[in-house]
Image (cartoon, rainbow, N blue to C red; front, side, top):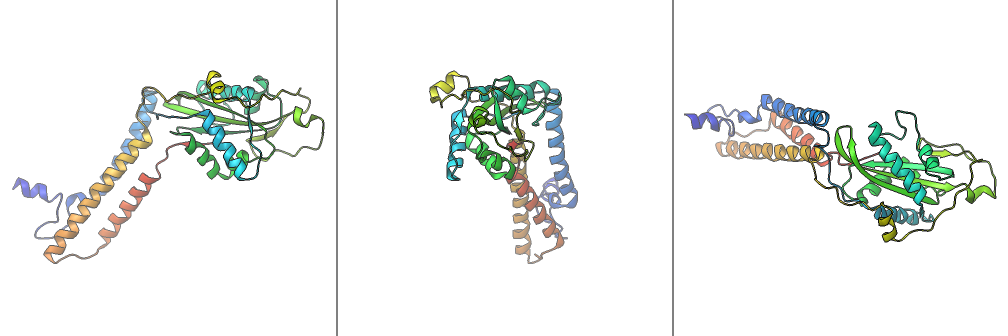
Length: 305
């Protein structure tokens, strides 16, 4: 008797041929609530146990610059040159995001990216910034920027000559986060001898500086060894923590497999009984599977700004 009651949760009823209880509308609602509870639970953990959630990243400044220049050269543009002052500005910006706990181009205190460049001693006529967080490798960072029209436009801006990169770890909005700050610049010195009317900024990540600022000297591209000595080579994050995106993907995939197996059992049993028919319930379950699969495949891994 107990076995029969339990079996009704997994296979259609032997007399009424009613679907397995785990495929009922009530359980579909429970599955949806299950996902909501996981998401809310992750948010609560981020608030009360900051640093417990996050990602393990293996990023390299040298690789990001290499991939950036590869994209520029593919589009007929000159490569940008590593600049230590611009990298210091990027590092200051990343540290400020952790200190003020924000994910934006402009700090809550009002400081903009160009202020960090000036503080680092980089004098520019054109400058731009791309941001990324929680990517696991360098290739995905550049690929994400290239897939975004505004970031792509910034990365492929022909005006830029210099590049600075910072990769910093810290706690941001309750989660252990790896930030990537990419800064571009055109040094004031390079156009000082040929004054001309300067175009207006096109977006919040592109700006024209005061032309009265003194020029700066642009260093040559350092070797990979010099980059590491300068503290810009990123080692893998130690003490890897739980990745929220991975948790959601595992939960979604597990539920996807579970419901698929139940539907397969339902189909085989009813077909053997000779009573199988396509119903609106099948359409509902297939739609739910499609939504679960899409959310699993496209679960956010990293973000750009």
